Amino acid sequence: MASVISTRRVDKTAPPAGLNGDSRRDRRLAQILGHATKVFCEKGYAAASMRDLSRATGMSLAGLYYYFESKEKLLYRIQKHTFETILERLQERLQGVGDAEQRLRILIHNHLEYFLANRQAMKVLAHESDVLGGKLEEDILDIKRRYYQLCRELVEAVKAGQSVDGSSRLAVLSLFGMMNWIYTWHNARVDADAAEVARQMGDLVLYGLLRPVRPKRESIPVKPGVKSAARNRHAASSRSELLKSKELP
Image 1 (cartoon, helix red, strand yellow):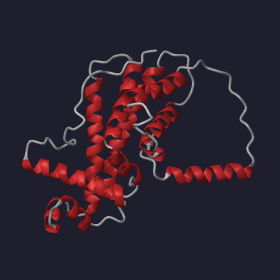
Image 2 (spheres, rainbow, N blue to C red):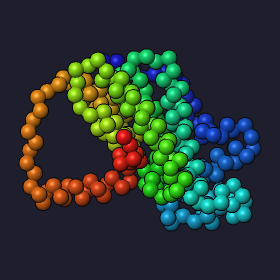
Image 3 (spheres, rainbow, N blue to C red):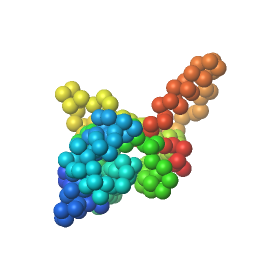
Image 4 (cartoon, rainbow, N blue to C red):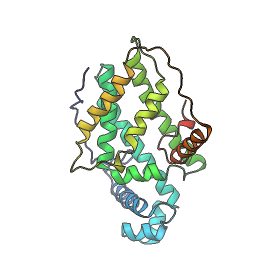
């Protein structure tokens, strides 16, 4: 099974999607988003104020309001830029790669590489995923759905022509579950770098997807109290999922 990660180089320090970095305004916006990400990461969205953000960016409160009318708009731009950057870099890396397994490995590596280099953004996206409302929320959900759908297509391509069973939805959401929480446990002093972690995660997913079809087994009975407790724990943890399964097909 192929396990070589694409060597196509992508600049991890490039301006966020939608900011080309060529104009003074774009550079200033990128700086504001960077400072705001740090504030939201450290204080949490609810506790952070526009005055906190003003101090962090070194701008007057009026100057900050010139760029963003509210902290919700700031959070929206952080989420939008992050997701669009990941998608753009992924699509660039997938160009010219035909092998289905390799394409899925590229997605894993692209995701982990970005978020290990941008841990604060990862934490903000994970912990503040339910804050936005209305049109802003719908806009971000649309980007998430596109990312989910692309991942699902890559999984389906791996399964095509293989005598395998299992749900593609389950495989995709399990993969995102592994990738999205890496910022909570990865320690650069003892854990491998993004490329090696991506290789091992890719093995877990691919060896699971490509297992031979097995006869269905009877489910193990679970006591009602145990099942209820497990359901409650799952519901509590699911509230901060980066990709909400209820929003995805």
